[in-house]
Length: 271
Image 1 (tube, rainbow, N blue to C red):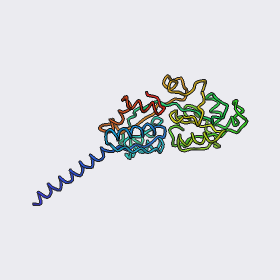
Image 2: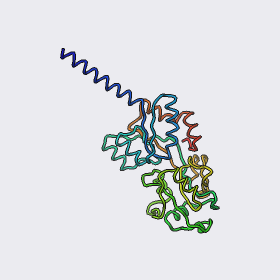
Image 3: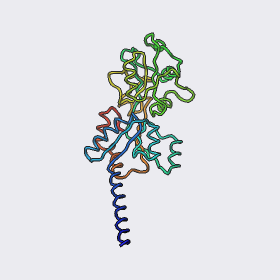
């Protein structure tokens, strides 16, 4: 009798484990970049509707997305920058194998209030504004008004990209710059502040702000795709190892006509 009880107990445990696995595979957890967020949420809504798979999307920043995939608390990390070497090392130490998937391309728009008469800047001028070398709009052809500099938080992939592609090494952002937590927050601050300047993903631009030409090139789908806009970047989704099952299906959405339609409609650029 005890022997049969052991068999039944073992079968119950196996059934529970199988049920847990099935449940896990019916859900996808995503975390990371606010820039990649609109794509992730659009994909999630489509995937839930067509596949019946629950997808949750958190937007805590690219750095936290990297931490989540390393710690095993998400299935997909959304990042607006490539994973850093120290993050890759931390992943390796935990037995995690981060695999990058480029989901789209993006241009980082330098934006001002629509009333500002400045329409173009060079990367050098943007750098000088953010270091504090240039403090008044009149120094770059604008009105006589002190420049209000808006940046992102240190955990942001967009901030990292700005530091890399615009500021360069040895050029810290002035301590007078304000910090906002998301693309949307930066846009809203610039839209409500006539003397402000900020930087946001191309997909977040609208009539509430004015995107400037940089080094003579205006940010657009065409200039990002052909590489002429100087502040462009790929957007990533990271998985632990090569994806399988529903996670692979989700990642592969970027290569389908439906996925590419969603990317385009959101203002991003198909790779």
